[in-house]
Length: 168
Length: 351
Length: 100
Image (cartoon, rainbow over all chains, first blue to last red; front, side, top):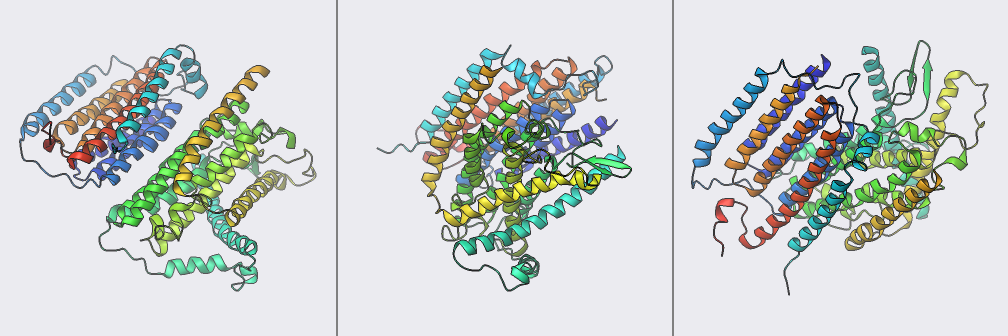
């Protein structure tokens, strides 16, 4: 019961912040709304028993990636975005079709709700503790883990090269 | 369930009041100690030894005019100091201060998030602390940006870049302790250090402690890393346009961060609430006092740590910004990684 | 107890909001943030399925998705800064000629 109440509260916060992200004209407000989305998603991960993922979501996503976004917005002094007025095709076709898609998916999910079970933390479910995830990461998923380290190295090199000023 | 929430709420209230009082008197301690290092008295006029100075400062902050400059971005201007203070005070929730505290019919652990027998704990307490320090960067970044002032913006960009750079070495320096303790839960880390002075993790992890100390100075924007908020640089950095209560909030946030960092250092490197020699606390005390004795040891160690903080503040000059970033990325980060590698080899070899 | 379909429904709604943001916004930084929203929605799906099937593989995969998202954000923002240096605009409609 408490899980259901908490889920609804934080799902509502998520959706409200995501709509706010779309509705705000200044990028900094959108960035702060995205941080709220990530925070409430971290709470939803805790409801699902994924404590390590929730902590990493706050540390990496909300605490590092979004800081990068806020930095770039502050550095480039991004102002409120202007309406180009070139074409409203995206508005007229995009909004109805995306809403239709979302409605279709949610309807089909709720239709088959009785056939799928529950997905909350209960007494016989696994808690995603650090030890268990470490066993998987360094055991079964060792190769992807090492490959992601190479990926991060490539990203660092790319960012350094791109951000350098090309003066001779 | 309801008693748990009520007891946790009472503990939070008590701890927040204690923390804010400690913050105010850390300011007094700093002014006295820095004054004595610089061969002058520090505050002496307000009350004996200047002990009422923080109260006078508090009254001043409340009564000063809280000015909002005209072209600031008001929502963020007001949000930023609140965010800084809230994040600084949130981290006290997971810090264990002792074992079990028997209070007649009820008993509770000396930690806001603990169960009645004093052993319940959060498995990822250390990660929560790291997460809270990551969010605290936003308070500074948004403060400088919303002030509509070039110097504030530059100061806040520098401060946030410094903070996120040193967060890495802060986190990595703690991994050595985690390898030795085998858990992220702060209570378990302290319990593996019980049994006296020789079991504390500062001896195997001396380099880790040094990296943690230096990264903590940079995280809390203290000398020798306080370039973003020094008065002689960039006017006053990110809190130039703030006055009265909002400035007091930034001030409180900085000292509360200092306190949190000192608490984490005592928990991880100095054995938390365990006494230096077993048997130092006499066994014939009433049970309530015996349960509060660990609190005394904890407070003593935190006090020593904060004294070292203030001592360094009075002694060292500050880093230039490029020296600061080079030190963080090119020296501390490789050293922290080397510490992890060596520690993991030793732990694997011993088991 | 929360049914699995509620989590998947929330994930679908967030993903569609991300797609909407990608289509209708004109500032490149907001478009990027919509991409991050889409990635977060997918993460929620992974963790929900992992909890439903009593396995931790979902959470490990979320770990990798986060790494990829962080790397992509870093490189993407570096590209944005490089483009801004020459074009001096953040509006995608104005970056429509190969040569200035």
